[in-house]
Structures are given as C-alpha cells and as structure tokens.
Image (cartoon, rainbow, N blue to C red):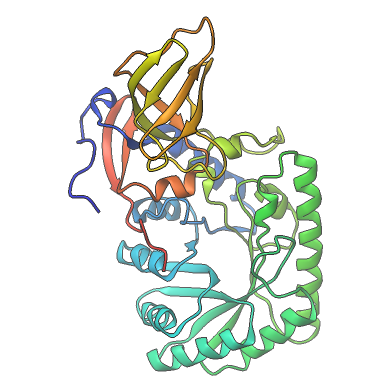
Length: 372
C-alpha cells in the first residue's frame, strides 16, 4: 500500500488528485439498506461477497446492517478481513496446497471460518490441516449448478463428498455452495429466471437426496447481485452472497431489472482528469488500464451525454466527443463508472469516501492484492 491517499478528510471532491477511487457514501448507504430490507423478515440470511470491496470497514458495515458474516475467495482475503475485525468468513471457493490450507486452519483459531470443496482429495487434505492446527473446520460441498466452473455434479456425487466430510475427524459438513456466476449478467430477466430456475431444481433435488440419505444439509448458500431475488424466493436457499450491489458498475447497469426488485444506485466511480485535448472530437484522461478494469467493457463517462470512453492503454483513456457536444476542458475532472467494480477496486489502496461533494473518510482496501 502507498503511504498516502489521493485526498484528505474535509477536502472538496474537486481538489482530490486523480486517478482516485471515489465512493459516494449516500448512495452506498442506501444500497446497504435496500439489500437489508430485501431479506428482512424472511428466513434467508445475507452473507455479502467481500471480493467486491476487499475492505474490512465495509464488511463491518454490512454486518451492522444485518449480514451474518461475509464471504471471500482467497485465504489472504480472509486473513485481511479477520485482521480488520470480521469474525465470520466463508471462503466460497476451493483452497488447495499445504501452505494455504495451513494458513486457513490457523485462521480458524481466531474466527469462524468455512471453506468449499469439490474433490475427495481436498477433503482429506483439509482434514489433515485442521488436525495439525487443532481446529474443526466447516466445509461446504460446492455443486455445479450451470456455471461450469468449480463444483462437483449435483445429486449422488455431491452426497458422496458430503459423507466424506462428515466422516472426517476434524471437519463438519456445513451445507452446499450453489452459485451460478454465469447467470448474473444474462441481460434479460427472463433468461436469468430460467437459468436460476434450473439451478434451484438441482439444489433442491440434491438437498432432498442428502436428507433422505441421513445427511443433514443445514445451509444452502449462493446467489449474486443479478439474481438474488430469485434465490430468495425459491424456498431452497438459506444464505445470499451478492457483492456488487453496494457499488454497481457499467456491466450490471446493462442488465434489465424487474421493477419489483430493489434498485441499486451507482456509488463507485473512478475520478479522472482530462490531460489532453488534441482536437474537438477527442480527449485523453489519466485513467487507463491501471485505473479501471476493462474485462467487462470500457468505463462509462458519468452524466456527460455524447462523451464516450472508447479505448484504454496503460495510463490513458480515450474519450470521443459527439459532434455538437461541448467537450470537457483540459484539466477538467470527470467521474467514470467502472466496467467491472471488483477488479477495479483491486487497483487502489484507498476508497475516497465522499458525501455531498466533500471527503468524509478514507477507507483502506485492506485486501488489495490478496490473491493467494
């Protein structure tokens, strides 16, 4: 982490140096409350995905708003969150390798930790690591519900793996991880509804098979920002894992939204400066590939119709200005909506938290670079 942020508390947004990662606190807090309201009064719990923000301060605010804990993807993310005061973390991913497993087991001495598996060898290795650390680990079986990424097949293969966990001396079978990542960005509500409907059927039949076979499945966890109302209404899921809802991004903003679903506002931005104006139709900003992820498309220029971010190189972003549109001036600062919030956050050391145009707080991206 660098020793200084791009801003100081009390500074006007206009004075914040660029590029910087800006969090609109009012919009962020409304997003927190909307998600909390969505699950309030239901039997389903919220376990937000911290890979989106990698920030202990944000995780703690999610827990204060009603979340039972958070999930993440890497042991190093869990270590950073626990060090920041988060006491309940699910690593919603497989962890392989003696070094990582020993770190995971050691962390379970100081916090409630869970992890996922999709192979019998991983179960045996986890059991050995837990024995070395003198802990008992919660382990969930990840099943493939259509994303074709990690996950054992539903039904009998998942049951066999659950039995292997239950038979281990240092592990506890804690349920099923069932996340359909590919469904999150299906643009139409109908397509997402179909994909999640198929996933729910697979989860339901697997859970029923386990319970009729004498294996208690206490928790089914999964879902994301693009589909969570469907898992919430399914009667099958016990926990929801949306992450991007607190920020949103250009990719999620392209999704069709059911009017009955909660509306989440854009709260995360990249603050950038116009560094060159070669001609009336083109401008350069100082936010390129090292300032905003483009894996899900280019950033969008916020509230400037006719000005489009079309290309990024290492340190430059190219804006094209439509004919007749007043172009931003040299030195003018602009807000960009990241194409994909999660990897964009990982490019920064700090969230510059702004309320009504003034910097209110600086929150460290405490798990930045936590990829092991």
